Length: 111
Length: 115
Image (cartoon, rainbow over all chains, first blue to last red; front, side):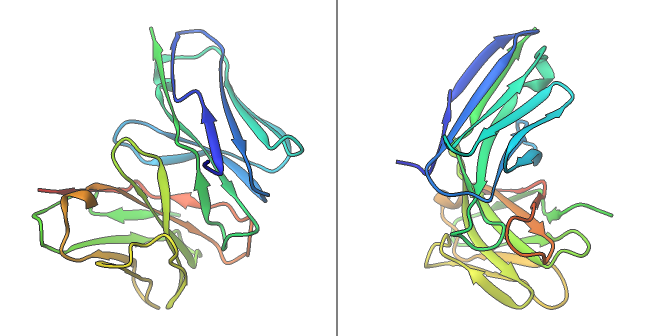
């Protein structure tokens, strides 16, 4: 079993829909990242959080430390949101800022 | 303040050749991490380096792969005698020398194709 599990693996939505991507982890963490990667593109860190909730534009990320679960929400989705979204954790049991990744969620938003 | 710079962006090598991937961290960052993304797979940790020191290489294949981060210049990930299975996107991230829990910033990646 992977230390970081994401669901769903693939998600197709219509423009304007509310989207949720889930992440569960089995290790103790010091922080959790949500990353975005467009096809052939680099990796962008959307959020780094260790508790509570963060919001940036149409994106919201939440984390429940007790339940070892995080969600990424996209409100009013748009075709330009189509990308792979990956959850990644930093653990005090691993070195430095080393990240352990989920398998990613491929999001496609159709116009 | 330029971000993490990786070059080349794309690299094509024939089987048996050597591949050298470079990563220049953000200014002021002394920690570098290399990650590999195989086709249709998620990202996997390879190696964590500080200047002139390998801190954690637990994710590096035991043969043909090596990494360095010299006192001057970029970090280099070197793959000797490349095989088709080495074809992947290789990402570098850097972070400042502030200990655990520090955010890491990613480069654009090098896409290696072995033909």
